[in-house]
Length: 152
Image 1: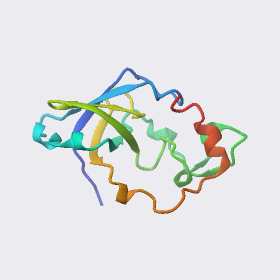
Image 2: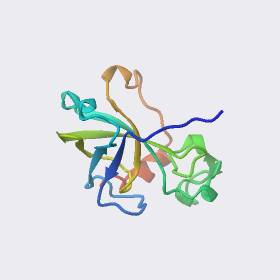
Image 3: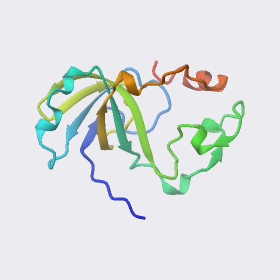
């Protein structure tokens, strides 16, 4: 089966190359693709947070892994690709929950988006509380260590 997707927008940001940490100070803009009318953003500012689904277009398909230590760190256990958020995935799709800062015409400004400049955006969805976890989130201790500087 072949799946064809057309980007709905493009990320504009100061981040030009992949860096694992310090994404919290990065403010990004998402500009709608030409075929998407600006009314697609109507009332988007009624929401504080959005989910951005994007395509890792700058990932080298030769880097695809199915099992590895996160960031290659020997202190972390080897694990399957579906037990981590590594960019080198079978389908190079990213998902991030962002804070919506403002909308201006065909552009929204967001914080906490870990996508590079020029990244194609596949979809934008508002965060509904009702879609958030209904129980506590369980994760291994190594995740907190891995993420301690990700947003700082």
